Amino acid sequence: MAANYWASTQRLHWQFTRTELQDIRADLENEDPSLARQYPLPDIRCLSIFFNVQLVKLGKRMSVRQQALATAQVYVRRFYTKVDVRSTNPYLILATALYLACKMEEIPQHIRTVVDAARNLWPDFISSDVAKLGECEFYLISEMNSQLIVHHPYRTLQQLQNQLGLGQDDVSLAWSIINDHYLTDLPLLVAPHVVAIAAISLALTHKTASSSSQVTTNNSGGAANHSLVSKEGLQIGNSTLNTPQKRTENFAKWLSESEVDIQAVVDSSQEMISLYDTWEQCNEKTCKDQISRFVKARGLDK
Image 1 (cartoon, helix red, strand yellow):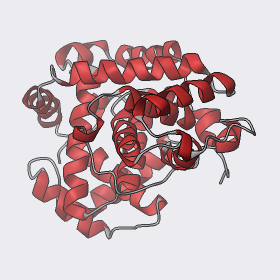
Image 2 (cartoon, rainbow, N blue to C red):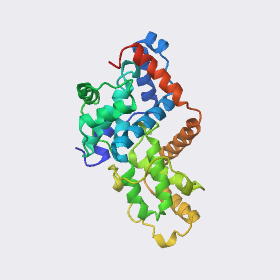
Image 3 (tube, one colour):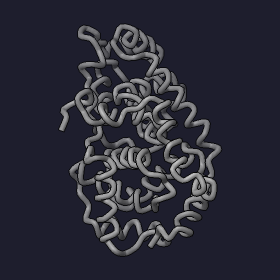
Image 4 (tube, one colour):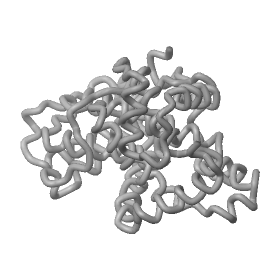
């Protein structure tokens, strides 16, 4: 297990450029063009939002913490860079990813508990046979090359909270934004600390932080390497950060003097803004119908 992101399999094997990711997905589509034409998929961002909603529903039934949900979301996104969605039962993949993530985050759930919860949530798509989920677990592990350690942005946010003098509202909103970034390709594109800093930037510039929250913010995790995010001597005392404007000014100063890739932070912020714009246009029923169509037609629910 890598102690930090920089030496991890996440950075070495699961970080792509946007062009690389587009090519990977295009190659999956081209493996069976007739299948792609017969069963068109929703926009990738709408599909990601749908998967997230389903995972959150399952996680609530099992009282799973946000850390495990986040890891499961990364597993799903990694898995679908290797396998075409249309060749799987996505509901079984979601349940298996959460089952595996709970193991990796050291909050294991009994396989029968996961199957029962998933079957109650998606009765038309999940078999009562626990062996199906067990087989799918090995499938996921194999496709991800047993590279299961996931580094999250949460720890960087916690480490920067005192250094930047962030208020609780700032942290809560930034945490929410980090939760939401798993609905985008950012976990496959940028380092966890970049996401955390982009989330802080968006939270500090948001004028209605106290009224915005997408997902529960009561857990922490990840292992981004804070020592490479900032330089020594950039500590900012809480006493100087009495207003949102001052916190924003000090954050901008800290960022300009740090070694952080500012362009990556800007791009990540724009990706999140784009997500929120897209969110309103996505239709859950359309996603469900399109998935149901190929799962049922191809017997993937058996």
